[in-house]
Each structure stands twice: as C-alpha cells, then as structure tokens.
Image 1 (spheres, rainbow, N blue to C red):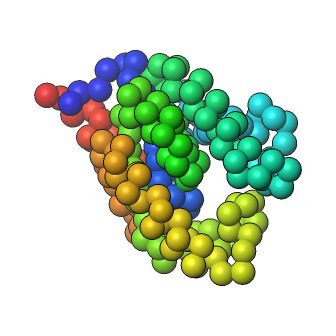
Image 2: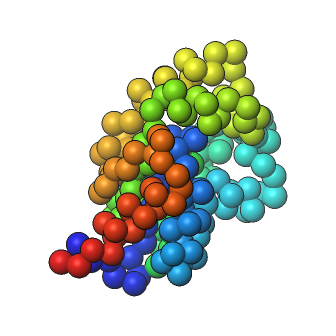
Length: 175
C-alpha cells in the first residue's frame, strides 16, 4: 500500500513505547506536522495531565482526550502520537482506524517498566506497585491496540531511528 500525501499516520501503544519520539522523527522524515494528543489536551486546558487527573479524574481526562482526537484525526497529512489509554474509548478507536494508518508500537513489559521507572508525570503510575500496574494496563489495552493496528512494530532494543526507518519502509513502499 503506497501512502498518499494526505494520509494520516497514527501511533498507538503503551506509555514508554516511544510514540512521541518515533512520531517526531517520522513527521520530520515525511515532512508533515506532528501532534501529540496528550500535549494537545494540555494546550487546550492550560494545565498538565496530572492536574486534570487530580481535579477531574481519569474520566474527565478521557472526555478531553476524545475531543482532541476527534479534531486531530480530521486534519490531513499528519503524524499523531496518542496517549497510551486513548484506545480505551470506542469513539477514539473508530476515529483512528477510519482516518489514517494505525501503527502499534509494542514494547515488552520489562522494557516499559525500565523506560517509565523514574517518570513522575504519568498519573496512572503514581502507585505503590508500578510493575503490576503496567502488567494490568497491558492486559487491558493490548487487545485494543491489536484490534485497530494496521501494522505493529517492536520497539524494545531498537533505536528510534531504526524503528522509524522500519515504519517508513512500510509506509513508502510502492504497490
């Protein structure tokens, strides 16, 4: 499938999989605008996600995320990195799968734990047992990532550039 100029690329996957970093690199290579749905929610509200979770809870954040993803997926020719939980809402899965190519960046649980270990900005990891939380999130979300993914790429031991180049090779291949 050769990619057309207007086609969107949407990155899904767990926290720590590299969606934002890989997304920025892909956008540069494809000469497209890059968006991050979490960043978009923060821009719109003027506060960080941790604050939204504190004040409105996860449900309030998810409502804001739905609105951001609805708007962003209607743009054309963009690269969008979504938050790890964006796929929880059916309306997000529908917007993503119907309006672009969905790339699932997958990483194993140990690697994910390593990458998020010291991160204080992730509200869902502000818990005693981070490893168990990551396992639980994986169990809940992995089938949903798989459900909407056009392609899945492993990000465990590869550099950002290597992962992005693998994705580019698929996106740019000619029929």
